[in-house]
Amino acid sequence: AICGTVARSGTIELEGKATVREIVTRAGAANSSAVNYHFGDKARLYAAVLERLMKEAQDKYPTRRGLPAGAPPPERLLGFVRAFLHRIFDPGLQSRMGRLMALEMVDPTPALDRVVEAVIRPLFGELCLLVRELLPRRAGYPEVDRAAKSIVGQVLFYKHSAAVLERLDGRKSMTAGAIEGLARHITAFSLGGLKALRPGRRRTS
Image (tube, rainbow, N blue to C red):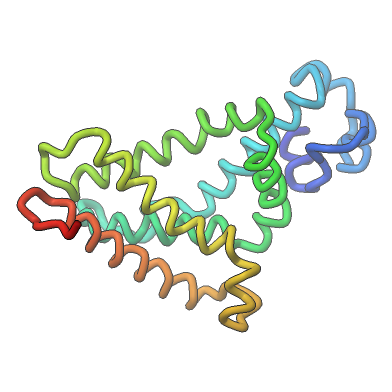
């Protein structure tokens, strides 16, 4: 309950000298001693909050939302990409999670290890299984791994380069319509790339 209260308030910070008591008070939680009992210290509280925020984003935008049972791999890839884009561009989620994850990318803490194992690795594994379905059966792990990372890279480019893209495009926010269009583009582009990786396709030097 305390973890959820702090997560919703967005008060916990990676940097700064705030004590656990100050964080809990600002978040409106009642008992700071419970934090020490359940988490031990501020670093573990921070890790738990970051993991909670990531899981909330995943619950809000599941990869198979709206897809029928037995949907073909291309449709499931579109669902994966669409959900990914919604998570990283949701204003509410980003106000609490975006800055923390941006800091983790630049200066990782042990919290990133926890988030990777609990949230990111399972999601990436899901994507790898999907990519394996789209590639020939004899495709090896390196091909699957690189292809999955290339799909992730396309999605993250639009987030990490948002400031530049806003200036190029003159657009200040990512609307639902823009997200849908971008999801379909990334999916189509990725499917074309995966098709080009099939054995027997002549590659240019």
